[in-house]
Image 1 (tube, rainbow, N blue to C red):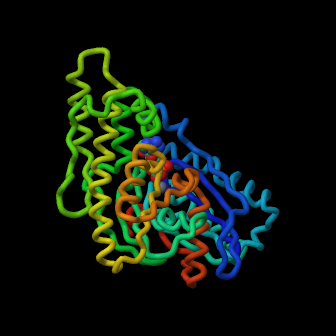
Image 2 (cartoon, rainbow, N blue to C red):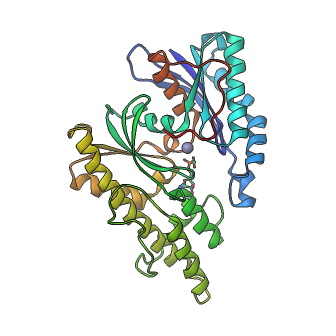
Length: 339
Ligand code: KG4
Ligand code: ZN
């Protein structure tokens, strides 16, 4: 089984071909990701109109490249999968319409993929990982904790009540003039700072449940920036912010582990971290010691699978196709589509 996967929900334009034998482990035949970061950087955030135009400009070329690299014609593909949501409507339209055109012309089924489900399933490409497992999805647009029971079966344990965690990193970076995307820049600056230097709140820490909140923390950073004597202690602010985020994460994930254990009767003690913020080493280390202390397994997929990519969409397409789940050609994009 060979599936072509297209990803256009945010600021990455991506295409990939993934193959799987009956019941076997899928493997990547070819993949391309075009990052639009440079086009959005002057605005310190993703501009939807620019994103949609960039998808139009690059997607066809990327699809042609993966087909050529794998030496395949559209007739060799068993299904075409595209992210149908959640995401920016302009980008979703570009990817989904392209997928529909290929599916129609090649007379192949279409699979409309939920971007969050693609993130949730992608770690299964390279790790031996059975259902159920606990997923921490942390990116620029998402911040949630889910029990993944099976393809299409999730229990949401908690999510952010305001900003996503990657968004908070990006906004702090913007306040400090560190550029976009902010996460990697904040992490780099934090390495030279003192995490105890600036007192910052730990929103929702110690409270019941597994929800997150970052807008109060972000505002506290804003006040600290305003109050600081020049020169601005950038490294200390970054280190203190990152420490606050990490502490909150460990607290929230700890609660989710307990809930997950209750609901799955102790099966599936694996914590999977996906999304761009999974690149953060301080967060990874804190989650690794949390997991070790509770006798859980921690699975962090390689970075190219953590951030937005076409492989995860093709992979979700394979899992759905195996279960006979395809979509009609008039399926509509869904900018809002919670799991
Ligand atoms: O998954 P992703 O590539 O795109 C979506 O948002 O869907 O995630 C990008 C987010 C950005 O907010 C970026 O600042 C954050 O992930 N990020 C990081 C790091 N690398 C990327 N946040 C903290 N530390 C990092 N090292
Ligand atoms: Zn994503």
